[in-house]
Length: 227
Figure 1 (cartoon, rainbow, N blue to C red):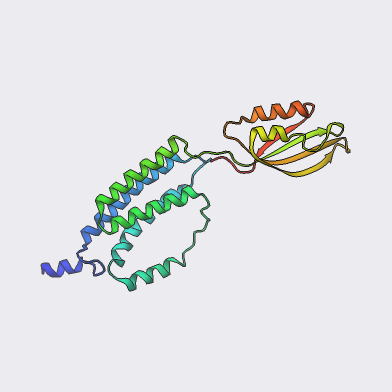
Figure 2: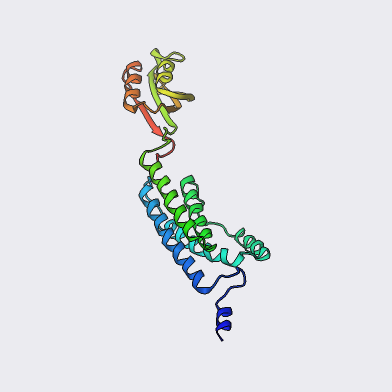
């Protein structure tokens, strides 16, 4: 009778895996994925993160822990499940590289738990979470986004390359995107795509440009919002 009950709660896909072990793996995956999502919320730098995305990380980690238990040692089942998963598409595309990293993080933790490597799962969660937090804390790798710079110049002051010296000093790169007349032809408007140097302050750049364009309108807009 004991052997029959053991067989009932033992999955044939993974040798030695039992109902209780699988439950422990699921619970551990859920616990660690909560840690992952807390780190995600703490290090998020956009305007507002998606609650659905946070829930998805937790659910995917738990589900994958069971999937790994099912496919372990059974190549046929593994290929079948991968074929099914290939048909799944996210309703909204994940375009943020950091979000993709967190999804992969949750999946790896779920896979590790599903293989009953609980100690390794804890180690992965703690170490990777620490790396994510330190990258956020020290703002590692931060750079300036591409900006659109528009400068209005009186027609009588206009000459080619009049802003090159300033742009070379304050930007890493710049490119003239548009040149047009305004105000019935009495004004010229330049539109540049620029990438400022890390040490450049926007106000300093605008002040230097206004010194050359007779204090007329100068605007600076970001093409991509800073995360």
